[in-house]
Length: 554
Image 1 (cartoon, rainbow, N blue to C red):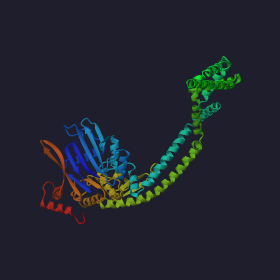
Image 2: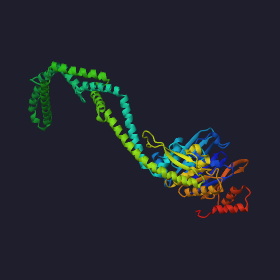
Image 3: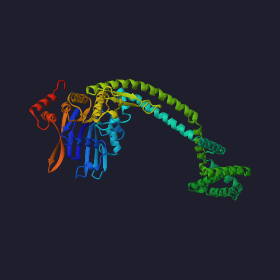
Image 4: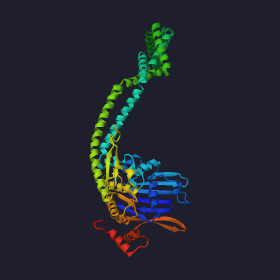
């Protein structure tokens, strides 16, 4: 609910601070006193567009903030959490408009786009005025009312989910059908490329191995000659290193008389001899493994040539060609996957459409029964307000399922007996539209998703017993949700749980508006003023007290 409204430098209001309670809050005052400033300020905090001339003359900017308590508002809390704007049990919407026309919006102190401010407001408050743009006349609102009244949240969510899935598959199918020729050409190209690359039997490191083998085969004769020189000239014979080491060891043996002082050198020479013998053995094995094989060299060079050609063709490095093969094969596998075939997509789309249509038809049956009950309940309330006609919810079924099903309801009304039913916006005046909205809200009160409702002069064009009934209805609605009601009728204001009075005052030659909460005696005097004007009589005060305490008013 709206707990506090702060307005600074807006139109004639220099500074207004208003604390609001649950229940029905009546707002009254003389014509031109500034009641509209309260609603303009609230509208500004909720994201309504205003021009710079709304800023109080001589001020740099107007600043409005509305503080809402989030008790029992899980949907509002959830939205704030999803958008990382949650700050506990309170939500503060703030808006500034500069004299230069620049506007800024805030939610719980976070600077946000104006559209996001408006979205938050949808979870918190609904303003019902006398203008055609109010929620009752919005396209789709009749269907929303039906679904809220019938508690169809889960069913409508299922329909939206099915519709989204169906549309996604249809779009994929359409894209595939439109691209069918191009896709076939791509499939043929990929098939050729994959088969061409698969013949190379490439794997990671294969190119490096072939290049190394090519070098060895090219240099085989030179390598064998060099290795033979190493084994025959350097490591074998009396003049070789091993032979010379044997001579050194013989000389070392003559020095054995030196005992421990020569042993260390002798061991090092022995270790050297052993290492050289192992090297000689490995070189011998290496000689055995190297072969002069022109045929093999020709095969390796041919294979490398194919690899280099294909690498240039695919614009990759030769050593990365195996990755290109894997990539192309993956694309081809995706195209050939059974679930991506046109036939499979067509079957999936048909199955989803059948499932969606079945769910929509079931929902339509539920809505039809709900529409009849809701029409009767609202009509009964309207007749209690002196509107003798009838209100009905009429379905204009769609040919194809949509995100809300197969239904497209509109509200038709006849405000006088014998008159034909016509669209709500073409029949009802501003005051009638507000009263119709009031009746709907009373009927929907138990299922209302909006914690605060604002009615702007809902009593225009009525009086006497009808005004009394309007007041009682609004008080009844105030028992379940917070009501802010701007009114000129004492019969309506007297039913409020709290009464706010707006008046003009002059300070230092400047006119400004101010608002105050009335106590019991002040309420009686204000009701008397509303009954008889500025000259308050004893009779007017008595009648005001009578309005304040009718039988059964709680």
